[in-house]
Amino acid sequence: MIRSGYILIGCLVLFVLGGAALALEFPPPEFETDYVRPTTETPNPQQGYWEYIDAGVLLATLSLATYVILRKRCRTGTFIVMIFTLLYFGFFRKGCVCSIGAIQNVAMTAFDPAYAVPIAVLIFFGLPLIFTLFFGRVFCAAVCPLGAIQDAVLIHPVKVPRWLESGLRLLAYLCLGAAVLLAATGCMFIICRFDPFVGFFRLGANWNLLVFGLSLLVIGLFVGRPYCRFLCPYGVILRQLSRVAKWRVTITPTDCIQCRLCEDACPFGAIRKPTQTWPAKEFQIAKLRLALFLVLLPVLIGAGAWGGYQLRDWLAQAHPQVRLAQRFALEEDGQVEGTTDASDAFRATGRPSGELYAEASQIRGRFAIGGGLLGAFMGLVVGGKLLLLSVKRRRTDYEADRADCLACGRCYSYCPKEHERLKQKKETVVARG
Image (cartoon, rainbow, N blue to C red):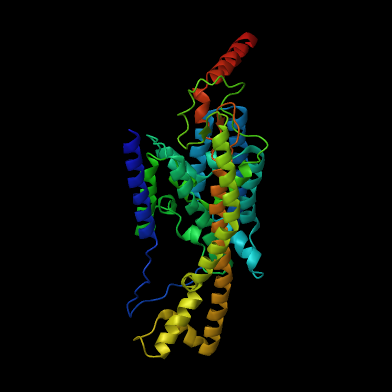
């Protein structure tokens, strides 16, 4: 049974990676000679009011989710809020404004003095972080439409081994670092461009993105929220904040009787068992391993920085100005036939080609620094995960992991103490009535 589960998980991983590979293939458009450029349309200025309405709905749903999850301990109420936010933020508002995508706006504001992040976007970025800092991942539980659409299709959860989950989560850190780098350098908003579910929310998108999103939903039938756990860059930030949350989900409302009924309740693998005391020999090995990984940490950071620096030219290809400069150079040297819309547009400006090449060189320089920082960040993440292998947190009861718990409330109904609480509550209501 375990072996077949691993095989299934492996097939699903290959499936999502294949879908991601398809999503990344965006060939340049081919226009016919009689192509007519569309007329620029000015958006309705009243559309801006919707952003503040959205911010109000965000605050209301975060508050309601916090109440039903932590106060009422009600999975049904959590599911109702989740469906509402899926319909409102997902299908009605078509995935915008998005807390996940707001990472890019904030990053661009930090590195580009000419860009100012809209207030509504800043609210969408910061408000879930504040709630997570106090109440855990209630945003993930019921407010995020991307999480809701995955939660709605989950029918037969399969456990993902912790070592595999930890390894796959590196993709989320990579997505976060890449999103910040590409936004800071003015390339693109990669989170928005490759949003796997925007095609469903807007009832139409690039075919490759639809395949990618459908792949994740098929995986989501068996693996709980694959995008949230393995790809979401915003979830990386929420994970760290939830570690220090003041209030959080507890499996039992009172004391844990260690009945083990909750052990298989969580489809996200977030329930941790009580720990046992390490044998003296194993404890000594763990101490030596910890010392080794501490020495290895700066090596990993340095190696990552060097690798990211070496990828500077490849990373710079993401910037349209760099691609234009390369194309323009090939056209000037006669190595290619014809021109492109971008090169024609540049010629129409009358600027000398030397300015274009100088700009491309400056952009490559920024990517050299950014690539090094991205590599160092990934080295730090890998080193941190290795360090955790030698650190064991003591637990006397079954607990929801502070970082991994998505506050869905599924574990409540498995706890006998929760049933006692509900029974006492019902008896109290009847007595008062």
